[in-house]
Length: 170
Image 1: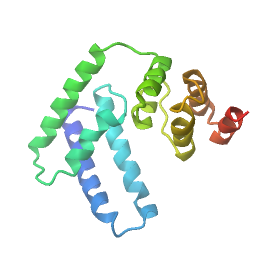
Image 2 (image 1 turned 180 degrees about the horizontal axis):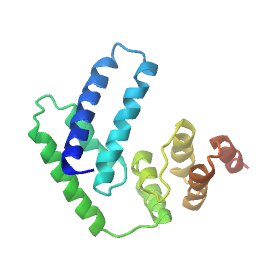
Image 3 (image 1 turned 30 degrees about the horizontal axis):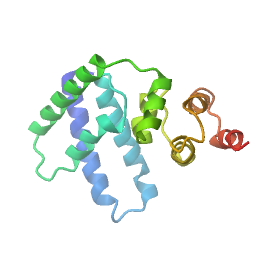
Image 4 (image 1 turned 180 degrees about the vertical axis):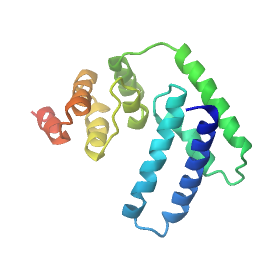
């Protein structure tokens, strides 16, 4: 993707996000799923352009820009410049292993959407994994090693979360 395509991707994202934001009040959520999934895919394309993981830390500026009341086209350049600076900081920082990322997440009680996308096997949280993360992992009932093992199973083999929670309850 070149800079022009990136710019167009952000502009398209903003249009879709503004449409979603307006429609969500009057439209059943099931009808908005495709729009939301398209927005998430666009967020991913934009942050991956800079080599960043799809964490809330890096996608939130896109969301704020999309909902900005006084949005101007120049704001896209500002956003892209900010993401470029974030990428420079990100790559200048220490390289953490997946285990270190999870240990930090547990210690600092980080949001799941800032953690899972940063792993070497990024996955998106569903309701069950969100509950496993918040109720068991952040509360110290399972270790970072256990959660890492579980997320790898999901990423590689697509195991349903029920198998994971059954194992941890024993």
